[in-house]
Image (cartoon, rainbow, N blue to C red; front, side, top):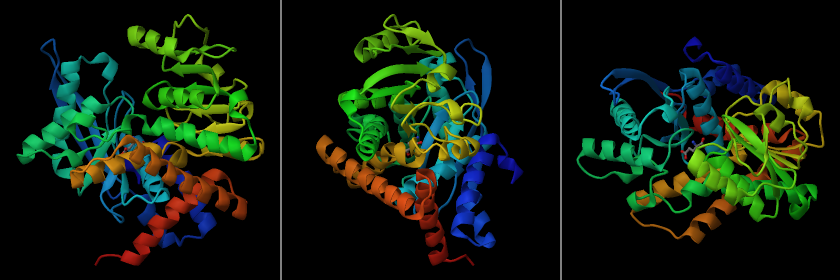
Length: 418
Ligand code: GLU
């Protein structure tokens, strides 16, 4: 197992083991469910604009193949490692199974810093990485999508590289593409809007009035920023937001449109004149109704879990809360957790819609997309909530039970080859 050894992979395994114990999954079946089916590590050499050559390390991990092709994002971040990608792939498996999508989980990444690369260098990284994993992906094999550090443009380059290789246009090889190239309307906003929808449902459950509620958002990328706007639309006041460089706080509520303009010219939330500077650590401990970690893994740990002061923890990021922190939060009954595999699943759900639309060359309206998305989220939310209440387990355990059980059942029913 040590090829995947990494704190995030250990964390994903710890979560799995707790649920496997709870479900009394036979030991013989556990490794089959846990160990990623396949992984590819590739060198990604590119010409830098200054004429030098640099080699990045790229990965793609496919966690299980029992329910269909694999699905999951591509991350461009300097800290990307095989074990982290494997953990993210495992979480994609449980997420897709929880929402009943016909996919196994996957994830990929390149250990580059997109902020330090020019647009032409980024294109070369993307195309060379795609070429290196080309026999590993495909509309019936494995379908990448955006994740941290990648976006619609990255997906357009990936689709083009794959299509040039095949000799014809293959829109269904990736999702999260520009709408012009076979992307789905609503995909870009889907994760953040899903976070907003589910946080609003949690407010209903707790009897909180959204027009008096406050929220704090860690991470102001595609997920955090749309989640903030979506919560604001429900009447929630956004007290603080942050990015990798720090955060801004305004007790009277941040002006999100002015903040967006600031980001457009400065590429960071820091220095925004409409609020006071605050660190990422301080931000997580601000009193608020809804705390949305929408950045990296392992942000809420045994060190700060006792000090977070929210009613709803809406996990926009993958794996923001460690199992040690979960234990502490589990004893704080005032906190309602919307676990990551449920909370941020809106992205992959609309990715699934995009893939279906591409395979059929038949495209849906925004209201069709959103209506179908909210129906799936509502169903997954209610199933998780009901199981959590019935079996007296946490929302995270309930969501993981639903996801893991479905994959386990699929493997058992298909049997073991040969
Ligand atoms: N990267 C996103 C996630 O972590 C989306 C994956 C997808 O759309 O395939 O869920």
